[in-house]
Image (tube, rainbow, N blue to C red; front, side, top):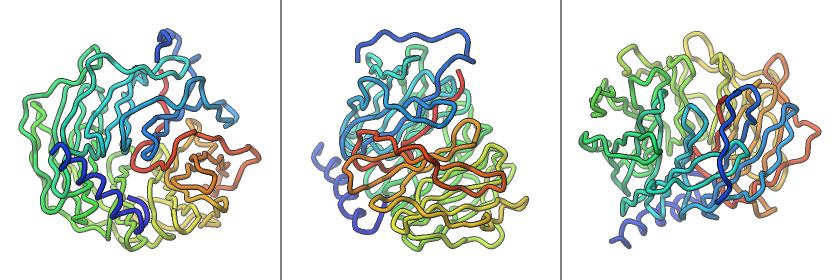
Length: 377
């Protein structure tokens, strides 16, 4: 979902997958959550693996032994369970979802029996806030949402709810569960639209409100932690679309939407209090910072935009647990493998490069909603 030149190749890979179809370390989970390390997980869409970097309190990032860990081809989406103990990765080329145990030392081990093969591209996965269910968007030019229970062993079991077709030409659709777990939001990269669904007790979905238009090639839906606002990065016209999420989950346009960004906006980060948002502009070589108003409207932060290092395209942003650092992750870079650049966050929300060296993830072509910081255990 990055850059115009990459769109045909990636979509072709997803369609080709559909047509064609036609580890070992013991895991230790400490009882004292305060002592548990935090990790940054980053997938390699082009290298079929997942990297894990230990995050120190001072923002230093260190790749854990054995990383990156093998996955299937086209790792486009990754989610971590709320307890921080399991990871699920979806693959756009292999058409699979794989579950992993995440050890206290940062190692990944594939969960026995967790692999699901769909025979079609898996575009996105999202997990409910209670960690009990996973929703996945699957398909090529048109997609559908499928639902799974996350069992005690980590294996995914179909809920029995019918699959829900995503309206229109819904290729490369991405799902996002709202923070209260009541709604599922699905954006469509090809169809330039976004829809909201109520999640019923049996995991079936009921659309609420109208399907809303977005800008061109919307990527990576981002919902504020209070669940009131939704933002989509429109890669095709260099804007952000903002929406107000009503109590029933229906969507309406936020005041002033769409908001201009640098070239090819992608995977954003929102602060825990929901007052600031950071967006990487991949082809623009910058990070755009915004203040989120009480009505959901966006205004630039002081000094925005903030330049990123030459020779790399910033594709994904992740805030540290204390929000003193902003991790800027390459999607493509002249160095080959994606690096993570650490920026410091000032009191006014502005960001600046830190003195820390970039951390090499070891993965190639990082794309999609596939970089996350582990929650506290």
